[in-house]
Length: 155
Ligand SMILES: Cc1cc2nc3c(=O)[nH]c(=O)nc-3n(C[C@H](O)[C@H](O)[C@H](O)COP(=O)(O)O)c2cc1C
Image 1 (cartoon, rainbow, N blue to C red):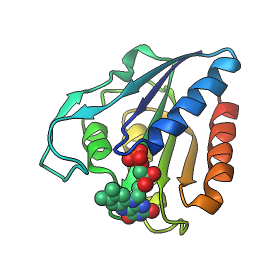
Image 2 (image 1 turned 90 degrees about the vertical axis):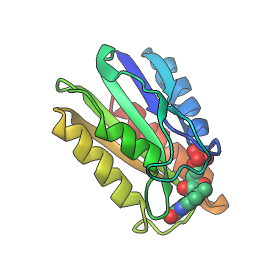
Image 3 (image 1 turned 30 degrees about the horizontal axis):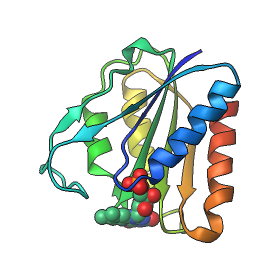
Image 4 (image 1 turned 120 degrees about the horizontal axis):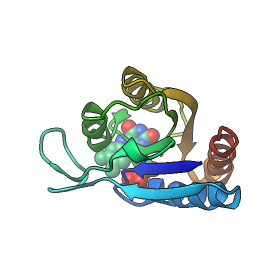
């Protein structure tokens, strides 16, 4: 399956998870293309104070994975802006993950997943997996593994 792995990362954590997912999905025989959303302006990005400079097109893939960090108890504004301009997704399978520092799941993680899920579904996609990766040291490895395994199994 041709899978587009589209992510935004400010400090590199989301990129680390994207790279691990790429490796695992490729081992399983998928053809994965990793694409990073980029912006102008200072980071961490603030709403309205940046422009998207690389806007990956999900159109050419059979399935898409979206990954982004949580920022200020919500979805990072860069991924929010990307989600707002998504084209129609033609019933593609979509998986979603977010990375966050705090181990409490209800402060930003579930809300961020919900924003990405709604945006994808409103464009016709079928969301097949969603994962929250907690970056706090004690949970990190276990949390990354759960995310990578669950999303890989969904395709
Ligand atoms: C400005 C800012 C706000 C953040 N707000 C939250 C937050 O509300 N909840 C949380 O769990 N982590 C928060 N974090 C931590 C990031 O979500 C976490 O480090 C994430 O893995 C960063 O991903 P990245 O390295 O791909 O940018 C925040 C980080 C920054 C820089």
